[in-house]
Image 1 (cartoon, one colour):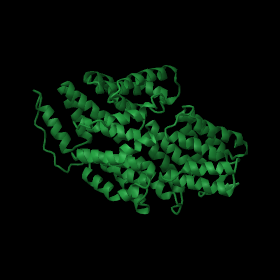
Image 2: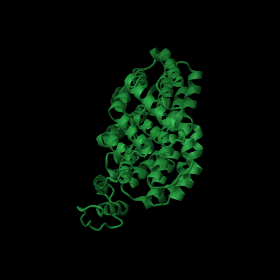
Image 3: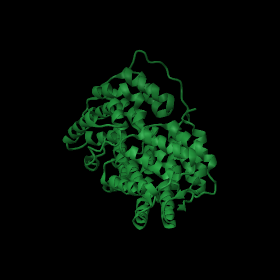
Image 4: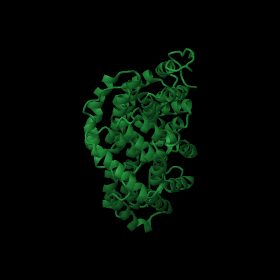
Length: 456
C-alpha cells in the first residue's frame, strides 16, 4: 500500500503511486501522456487496479465508446485485481463501469460519493467535472468544486489547477466576476494552466470583451500551447474573438496553421473545434473553400460512435457541408438506429433533443432554412442537455438567426436578435436588430448603445 500526493491510499507499489501522481498532473494540466504513465505502472505491478480504472476513464473522457477495446481491456485488468483494492478504489471502478455502459448520471453520483469521504481525490474530482460538462450541468460543475476546495492544501501542486476548474464552473453558472478572479489567481500561480486560461477566455467572451480576449490569448499563447490537449481549443476561442472583430482572414490563417494539421490526430475535441469554426465563419458569409472535405473525412469514421449528442451535432455540421452527399445520409441512418436500439443517458438525450438539432443542422446545410427553423426551435432552450459550454452551444442561436434571415422570416429574425441583444449587447447585434426592424411596419426607434456596453 502506498499514498498519492494528496495523502490517499493507493493499492500498489510506491512506483505506482508516483506514476499515478504524474498521470494526475498531466490530466489536470492537459499535457504529457497520462495513459502512458499508467500503462507502464500496471505492467510493472499487476495489483495496481486503480491504474486500469484510470486508463479506462481517460479513454472515455477522450471520446471513446464504452465498448472500445482500450476501455474494455483496461476495465478487465481492473476487475481482475480489484479484490485487493481499497473501498475507494472499488467505488472508482463502479463509477467508470457505469459511465462505460452509458449511465453517466450514475457515474457522476458515484464520484460525488467518493468526494464526500475523500474531498482530495484528484481523479474523482476531475472526472466528475468532465462528466457534468458532458451532461450539460453547469451548476453541478460549480458546486462540485466548491464542496471540496476548503479541504485542499494551498501548497498542493494541483491546487492551482483546482482554482482553474472552479473558475470555469463559476463562469458557466453566470458568476463572471468571481470566475475572473479565480482564473487570474490560477494563471498567476501557473501561466501554463491551459484550463484556467480557457476559463478566463470564457469569461471575456461571455462579457463581450472581445478585444481584450484576443489580446490575452495572443499574449499568453507561448504558455498554453504547451498543453497539447487544450491548445487547439484555446485557439478556437481566439477564433471566436477574431470573428466578432471581423478579422476573418486572420481566423482562416490560424485555422490552416493550427487546426487543420491536428485533424490527423483524430482527437474528438479537435474535430469539434474544426467543424464549429468553419460553420461559424460560413454563418458570417465567409467562403471557407474546400476545407470542409478534410473535416468531413475526419468525422466519417465516427458516424456510429454516438458518445454524446453534442459530438454528433458537430459531426452533422461536417456531414452537411461535406462534398460527399452520402455523409448526411449515413448519419441519419446511424442516428435512427441508435435511437431505436441504443440505451443509456445519451441515447435518451439524443432521442428527446439531439436528433432534432442534428436534423436542423443537416437541413440548414441543404439550404432548407424553414426546415432548419422548424427542427431546432422547439428544443433550442433545452439544448443545454446535449453537453458542452454556453459558448459552444451558442452556435445554435447563430444558426437559427442565419436561418431566419435566409428564409426571409423577418418577424422571427427580429425576435431572435432581440433575444440575443439581451445577453450580447454589442454594437454588431444592435445594428443587426435595427436592420431587421427597419423591414417591419412595427419597427420602433432603438435606443443608442454605447460601443463599450457590457452585460450586467
